[in-house]
Length: 246
Ligand code: BV8
Image 1 (spheres, rainbow, N blue to C red):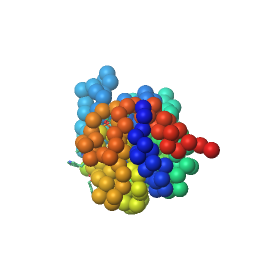
Image 2 (cartoon, rainbow, N blue to C red; image 1 turned 90 degrees about the vertical axis):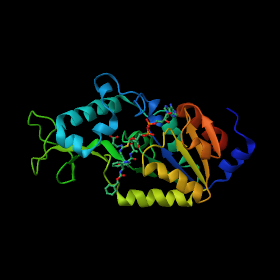
Image 3 (cartoon, rainbow, N blue to C red; image 1 turned 135 degrees about the vertical axis):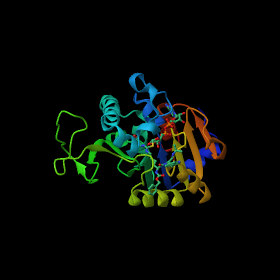
Image 4 (spheres, rainbow, N blue to C red; image 1 turned 45 degrees about the vertical axis):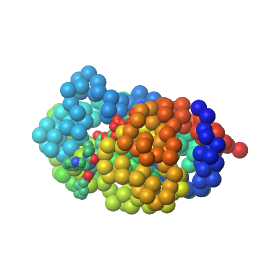
């Protein structure tokens, strides 16, 4: 894919770059996105119907089982060239912030450090009642495992629908959106708030918005440029063309 010269010039000159990723960047690692129909056993549920506290209170074993199924996919997955390209880009631009909606931890495994995991991390658990992270739960034969302190059920350390995001994460993401010259939005359907708000904050703050997605999204029409294709192909090409290593 040929990048228009004026876009290339903007990319090369940007000293502060902010990135927002969604499930699409992990699709090439074999992790199902939310828009893909859930596979097999889970095909009769919508993520929004399981990723919330009410569903967990109603049927903790069902919701826990769904997360265990997703954790299997995460354990079997490796960071793909898109994750690796962003981990490299972090070292090639002076100011860089990666905001991810993903809970699969693949950006951290790829080496990204200037990273905000806006929706938490599926590989961590916390006590449902206390909200504190628990390394090792107590298995009493009835999933989910229990908190060693209060005996209550554990839950994954992710942000569910209807739950507030971490204030520090929000402040970091908001600052990175307001202060960047270039905002890359990658592999997200831009349907979930407040995450989908940040590309628009960047636009309103005068940044150039570039979308990298396999399909059309509500952000396509307001982006300055759209690079249509799988992130695992587009991002390494973009990195080597706009930010070649020395
Ligand atoms: C909040 C963690 C307020 C969990 C996630 C009614 C009641 C309550 C809340 C609301 C409501 N109405 C609206 C809301 C707000 C709600 C919301 O936005 N709902 C949506 C459904 C309308 N938001 C919330 O509830 C948030 N909290 O508002 O709190 C509050 C304030 C104070 C006090 C109390 C409360 C919390 C939102 C966080 C939810 N948690 N994840 C878990 O994972 O189990 S969201 C989850 O879904 C993901 O993290 C992600 O954010 C989202 C999925 O979106 P994407 O990542 O974009 O994935 P998707 O599959 O949709 O798209 C993939 C894209 O990639 C597609 O475009 C596809 O074309 C593309 N693609 C595919 N393959 C490739 C590709 N692109 C490139 N390459 C490829 N190979």
